[in-house]
Length: 478
Image 1 (spheres, rainbow, N blue to C red):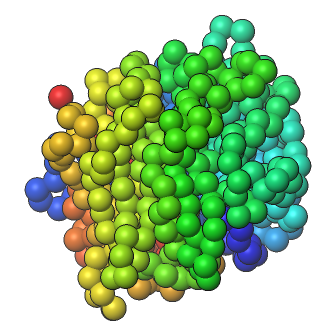
Image 2 (cartoon, rainbow, N blue to C red; image 1 turned 180 degrees about the vertical axis):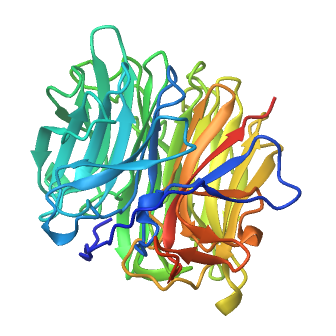
């Protein structure tokens, strides 16, 4: 979603001490939550919203993460940072390697087949043009290489898959230069990002554009699914939309890709999973100081591409602000279940499927009201398609503090992935060091004082509460 970037300088402090740990009783075995902000930035008070995560199956030590995080060098900086970890997420450092002034707007990324290759899609500041980037070593301090760029793009969302000859890269994006208002697009590279081709996936009329969320998911057999919102009409701030999935059975290598899933109602490409839903479009603080309107996620079973899950959010009734829906298909998207889960007043749904079939649903929900309202971040896990599920509360923090600096407040999305027998993900939230806010415990790199619930800078002075990105790992269900 379009945003206005607010420039700010971030001071850099240096200190040396062990990570700070808060570990309340009753935590679930194997769950780990880590504040990503490094010790050297203990004094920062930025709104590090909209986090994302990339990881390797072949090397569990290597992780890359991002958020709306500024370069500590401030307004003169010609690069923006990502976070990197070489110890499996226990510690994180900053690499200022993105070609953008101070910070980026939207950013997502995914790994290549050979560690530590990384692909990224960013909205560069200033001007907000799309940059499609690559580095052969994301741990390096060298600036990422620009592979492709153009204007009038929103919300690039990167997924990759590796084959013997070259990585394949799929960047879902909303392309405002697409013809006939059919803006849902996937930029496809079959040669490791050397070249990209824009593939239009909307086959029906729109109100002039599609929704901003265009979400690819890739199985190991190279089946590619893409979910998007087919915006059909608008009344005031309410958009009437279809929820659509397209599929390509050969990795989008053909001349007319994403045409392998037709809807029986009109025989056009793109299965209509839900029709005429109401999307409350709000670019103002609406739900726990957050804007809403683009929550969408899709995930495919990596080993069994017939099974795919979809989550989105819309408005159900007059008393509801925003409700997350989860549905399942077991026949390659041809037919879909009804809602397997509904969560009221929630956003930032992210899905992942582990190799043993466990499905993870990460979301953030506002509970309570007024000054007592809270953002609760949950990961739900299911082995039976959400006939039943088990959940883990990762954070339960005040929703009214800190006051928002810009939108998105915590993000238009977060991140969830699966590797082996564990889910790994990232979310943003209030960073007050209060063990009651983090039921599974918390590891801080930045300086904190748990007894007094204070954040500290390098000199030991108190620092205001802000929004930080938090990495987590949770075991899959056996």
